[in-house]
Length: 64
Image 1 (cartoon, rainbow, N blue to C red):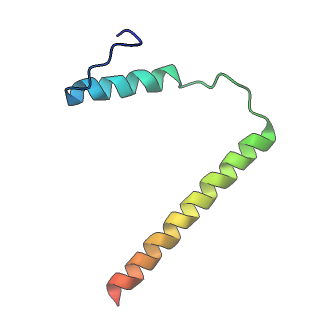
Image 2: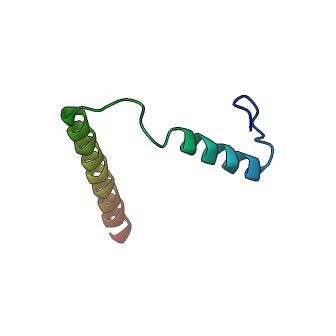
Image 3: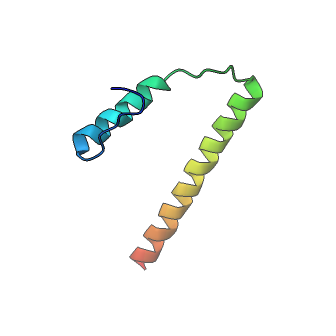
């Protein structure tokens, strides 16, 4: 599929376009420093913790 040709009219075309984009950007083009890598991991942990707190709060509201 050409870079500018995308068929989003059908779900199959949408999913194929997403797969194509994922293949294209699978490997990073830049070298990350250890500080950047650590910062990204800290951000992931923070986001997961926020989601866990959100789900806990929702569960306690539903139970009571």
